[in-house]
Length: 232
Image (cartoon, rainbow, N blue to C red):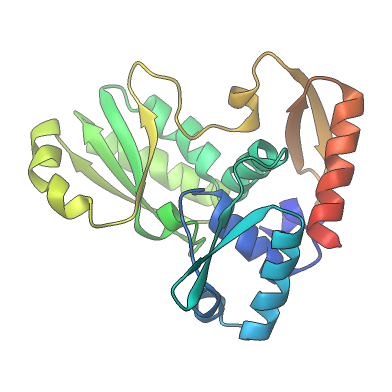
């Protein structure tokens, strides 16, 4: 995670917050819950939440005695940050190396921790369709070595999925792919196919990230704005 973001963001807590909120923009959380999850003091989290709220990367809404925070989907940097988080968590690699190669797949979901933006190291996939389990296991093993995370898959037929849907709806889940439709959770490359491409070097040797904008000047302004928003 630090390899991709460290050139832009100095605070590890801030990186965790961006990952938490921008991977699943519908997720919301409050101060004490985040402090417990990150195992840091409430003061440390409060400082970062205040900064991200001041720069309007997060929104804050009071609910009773708590203040709930969410990603600001109207922020101009939202698409770039969302895609970067997906890349950091290895989800774009899961899509490219596993989901798109499974053949008769109807839909794919992230469930539990990663659906909430928690980078715990174990990615839980729910796959619906007629899938060769041996092929899936082979693809998963290869992808695990690349992204340095464990992948656990639950394979269901459409009927089986419909049977347990009431239980699944109680668990965090994010639809990341559907057959005959564009990828739901996509990287910047897929989000902005018609836009120009520029590769920015990161601090880690041999590692790059792609940001797509309409022209180089906008990209420069966008990166400067991102640095200011994340590090001020």
